[in-house]
Figure (cartoon, rainbow, N blue to C red):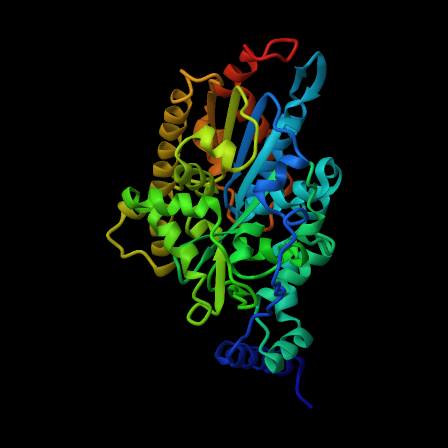
Length: 458
């Protein structure tokens, strides 16, 4: 009989062998986007039909939630709470600024918050903290991954590792919801992932699924959020079937984008990616990973959408929305800027630290460029309406740890890791800080001053 020590060693060796075998096995993703030869325009989740259920009102509010694990989810949640607690008056009636939110675009960790709010509305303030923010989701996924029964099943079926996340998110967070369950009367939710082959963002809305001859209504929200947060290597890509059951037609937006892309390299790349879905033979399957790879702030789809049509007024016509006198754009940026100590030694940094530093540098530069691009574009679009019958006042707000005045407090948030397991102290701090940074922002206060006590525009 083996001793307890030798038995534990035997179990450890067996586990390592299983992992080695699993890593060398071919894995196959589940394909759950159903084929369709005709999409019902009135029932599908597309932006052009959103106006039938949701009135834009006097203030058009667009939110963008960045990546960053639970850190990003909690910071975004704090902003939603602050908007809920900000009263405004419209037509003599008091309402909340949260009710004026019209669009939410998100990637990675921010997609948990946007999807939850899209599904449950104010219900997010009742149980999102207990169901997600304060749960050790990372630990639950890890335990499931190393569960011998689950590992054995994956070994024989070749199932993708990402299916563990899909099942957990679907059961414990999104409760079996599909895109048909997203509230049409609420803001339109853009959940963004990255197309590995095209190197561009993939947006989960019916317009994208039209190109795949597929119906988004039956697609699980949990699978979309998994794709949005599927960090390469840690998770396998989420794969979509590019069906050949229909003959896709180019939307008015895509036709406009093609015309505009001749002098816009950024737009040209997006157009090329979308047109590639028409190639049903060579692009039979679409592999999606973390949306933060192509845009860690979640603002590129919104910028690209406006760039394609040229200006705000044309966009309003294409997307069937009424022009609002005030447009508020809030970017919730949960990225961190860790200070490195490699300059204090001539020792060569290890692989982990090198990858971390290079990734942070790339994200920081890309985020900065994206923010400046969006700010200048909003100023230009707003200025172009000054001489029209519907002038637009634009307000740009960026929520970032960089704006925390107290150095010690700022360092506390900069040290919060990118994971799906945070302490209650970290979650409490993030929620409170999200609201505090919004309320203290000068552009946000400028918007509130522009709305008088009756809610009428100046």
